Every structure is written in structure tokens, then in C-alpha cells.
Length: 256
Ligand SMILES: [Zn+2]
Image (cartoon, rainbow, N blue to C red; front, side, top):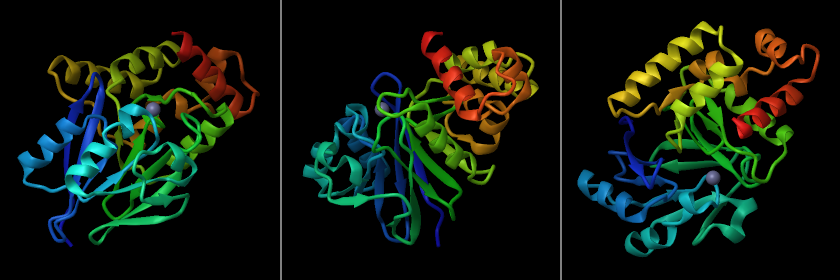
């Protein structure tokens, strides 16, 4: 089985587009459709024809290009069953635990409510990669537009349980601002300090900070570390539940 080829490129103001291509079957999937024109041009430049669209959630900067791409390529659209009514052109409805395929490469659907109530992530265990939409960001997590802190904490915990070496493709380049916030509540974390310095260099050079890894996020991302004694001490929440500490971190980020 050939390795998947991954093409990552900026879309809109701070989204990333991702195309994945299986050389054996010739299939290509776009993960979400932030900008149909850019995605189609990227596919053409690679010599790939989009055969599938995998949506993580219904927001316009994730599903807004569905119908244009489907009309021009005939791609089938995979998306969360919960959001069938608001994913344009959906043809394959998936829910937690379902497995979809790109050629012989398998992706497992992980239900991750919080940012929206229908949000799903796609984990390709054999390839060691995960597309996490607006659930987990490098040094951050998605805003809680629809779900509760408990929903999001459940979702992040599931992603944190993936193997440390899993490469995580987040849908936005928010890392520099996330690093500033993370350092404000976990300033003595050596892993975070090193990570933040690396991000500063990457951004200064105009390089993406995505993908990250589960291991790097577990070590430095405060949203995955509500059990950390230093963060708890700073928030004066030494004995609180993880979900309450997570909620407080999210609240502070919203006001940062
Ligand atoms: Zn979103």
C-alpha cells in the first residue's frame, strides 16, 4: 500500500485546506471546503481529481465550497449525520466509530461535539494522521459555539487518547496567539516555552505550524492539561474536576 500524499495550503484568512491522495486507487479527498477555487486549483496543480469531500462540521469556512466542488468533480460528500440538514450536498452520513475509505486507507470517524454539536474528526490509524477541524488547535481548542465545556472536554480527551506520534492537522493557523495565551496560564512549562519559541520562528519565516502531534499538544496545550498541578494552582482550582478547570481555561481564553 502506497503512502498517502498530503497537500496543505492556506485558504481564506487563516484556514488550511488539505488534499489527501492515494496513488494506488487514484482517489483524492479534500478535508472540508474552505475555498472551492483554491482547492480545485491545488488539485489541478497536483494532477489529482477530487473524488471525496470529508466535512468535519457545517461552518461556512468548512463546507461552503461543497456544492461547487461536487458540481465540477462529482465528488461524494461525507459528513456528520447529526448535521445532515446543514451540510450542503451530503451523500454519506457518518457517526462515531464509522470507517470510511480512500482507496485502501481507512479513516475512523470520531464524534467530537463542542465547537458545534455535529463536529467529527477523521483519524487514519494506519497512516498516523488525524484531521481535527475546529476541535483541537495547536496550543488551543475550538470555541464552544454550540456545546458545553463537558462536551468539548469529552471530545479533546478522545483526541488526547490517540497515539502520541499522531500528526494532527488543525483547520486554522491560530498558533501564535494560542501560544501567548498558553504562556499566560502555564508560564513555567518548559515544553510550552520551547514550543512557543519554535512557533515564533516558524511564523517569522512564514511557515505553517500545522501539523502538530498529539504528544506535543499533551505536553504544552493547556486545554489538554486541566489536570496539571501548576495550571490548577495558577487558577486557584487545586481540587476542582478536570471539566471545571477546562471550562475556566476556555473562559479565560475567550476574554484574552
Ligand atoms: Zn468552525
